[in-house]
Length: 398
Image (cartoon, rainbow, N blue to C red; front, side, top):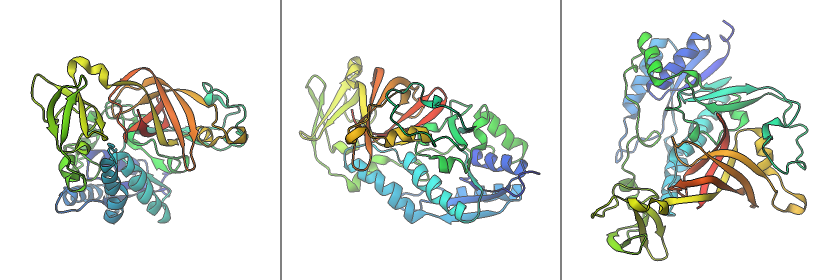
């Protein structure tokens, strides 16, 4: 078989998706090794890692492939959990799954696999990788403005890859993968991204008698499971009683700390009355939580945001990120995109513009064609053109 000497390390979570990914690669003739990552093992906040590891091992035994366990608990605590705590205590709402993908799955796991001689890594993510061959013009950025000064002569001489949303739109995970770069994507395989539905994934597992065929999908934070976030961060945040007021200025209750709330939140606010109420904003100067009643939902809407830590999947897009106008002024770059501000949100047409060249990273502005509800600092804004994932950033200012 043509793939028999191609070594692939598969990230095995103990779930059905990564199990089927390993199965498909084995059936295609790859030299497959299953790897379980132990990332969280705090007895105060238990997660079923031992059970998940046992399930992953059983799948590997069934498939007749080697199995390994790699311990990243120290790194996960530093790179993901500490980041999450820092963001919450800064008044922002982080997305730990994005950080977990960047730092662990496509960081530590990827690097260790490559160092051990892997040709590829594979995961059970619902996303598609599509090769893009050299082109003779800059057609990728046909909707861009003011790019005539960019040096792109050597930018597309080698094969590139596009990342596209999964065939199963309901399970698509592209929102969490905007930090991937070409050098990673070239060595990544996503076998289940082309499968039409999750039910088909389970059917494949059942037909092959995989022990995870009927296992329920994991919930909650990446590798940690269904953690009560408010209780988890409580030891780290300041408890400061303040007023809960409506957007019209009426006091309707009290809170014990603004860090416990996120923009757009409805449940767990702690106010009675006619409701429901939604968190509209957090005023740290006055220690006031502002909530909006359901009949004034426009208070949650905004037409624009700025983003930092912006990353682009495609090399030609990254040229825009790195570009500078003559004399170091901010580049006049504007791109038509569709943007999502949360997982499973239908992307909204928008204009993406570079507004500042910072010392370490640029800041970009996203202006939506229509108002978007509950834009939340710390969360990700992710950019698309049609089915293609362009990149994303961290929401900074609404």
